Length: 284
Image (cartoon, rainbow, N blue to C red; front, side):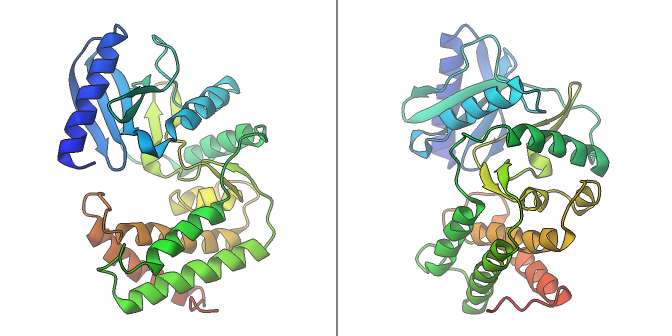
C-alpha cells in the first residue's frame, strides 16, 4: 500500500480492535504489499488489512477455519473475538493469533517438506472449495506481460522471453496430466512461520488447484528432495514457470514490493539460465 493508504489502514485496524475489546494503542507494520500486516499492541494480535475491493478475506477466513479444524499446520484466527471479516472505511480487516518467532534462521528442508505434505493432505479432503486453477494465475501474468500500458518499463526482448516462457510451460505442464488438488498457491518461506506450536502456514488468498509440484516450486529447492513422490521433471518446469510469473509481477507499474524492480532484472537472468540449463528455449 502507498503510505497514505497504509496510514488509513493502520488506523482502521486499531479502531476495530479497540471496538472489540482488544486494546490497540500501537500497530507495528510487519509487511506491506497489496495487503498490510500489523502487530497490534498491547493486545498482541496480528491484523491483516486489505482494500475491500480485493474481496478475498472471507474466503481466507473460512478456509483457515476448515484447515485448522482438520489439524493442518496453519495459523489460527484470534480466539478472543468472532472469526469474521470486519469492514470499515473501504478496508477488510481480519484478526489472527500473533506467533512470536522461534529458532530464527532457515527452516530445515525436511521439516518444511513434512509441514507442506501435512497441509496438502488436509487440502485433499476439501473437494468443495471453489478456487481458480493455477493456469488462471498464469493467464493473469500473460495478460500483464502483453500489456505495454501496465508494464511500460519492460524491454521488448524481455517481454518476449516472459510471454513465450509462460505460454510454453503452461502448455507443457498441462500436457503432463499430473494429479491435481487444492494448493496453498504460494508456500514460500515468507508464508511459513516457525513457532512454539511448530511450523504454521499463513496467507491463503492465493489458493488454487494444480499439481503439488506447483506448490513445491515456491519452496527452497532442497525441500522438493524431501517430499515423497515428486515428479522432479515436472517440478523443474514448475519452478521456471513460477519464476516467470513472479518476474512479470515485478514489472507491473503498480507493483509495491520493496526493491521489486531490481528483483525483476535479477530474475530475468535466472530464467534465461534455467531455460539454457534444461534445454528449453521458451518458444513453441
